[in-house]
Length: 234
Image (cartoon, rainbow, N blue to C red; front, side):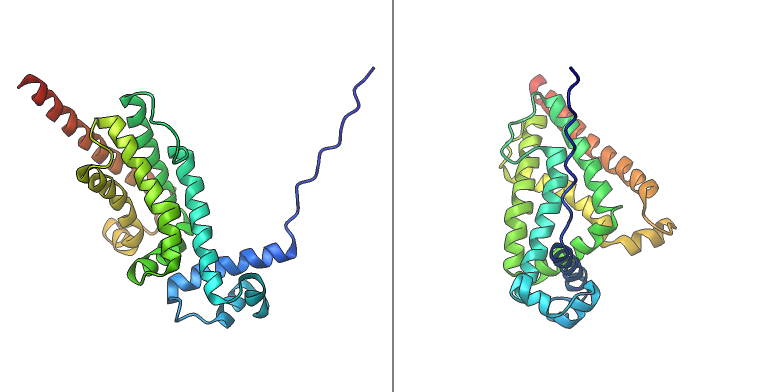
């Protein structure tokens, strides 16, 4: 007796309302980052999204609700990227110092790939920089959803890799420096391209940034290994 094949379910289609909502979030992310919240009108957002201006109130309750939705989009996007490299915030520590170090290098490469080379990252970083300069409730959402848990997770991996306490001041600052060197290539993008003679920063250029950032991380870890060896011998 042959088995009867069951027809596969067709993927769920995005409704026009969902498409409009997503377009408005993308438009807000772009314009709020470029022009600021106060410098952007709902009419401009609707025009950018090719949507009816009334759809902003319908989907988000107004401009402030749209800003919150843009912040939530950032959280969801970065959580997905960080989760692939670092695991869930509640995940246990890597099984060994070697595994922790491998995870650090993988996370650094993924961070560069997104922050430096991804076009979407430019709009996200601009939006976040605006919020950091003039904090609102949107920054609270981004901090609680991305900054704090991702930084904490990296600190935990650093402790497993080096033996240095995850929540020590030195570890927290060290992790900020690892992140900061990557972020510079986005916020200083134009200066970097001019100085390097690059016409763009794409995958090829990002790979060069990964190579240098990886060498920096390797040097940081080697310095700690050398210090630990001296301590054992003394």
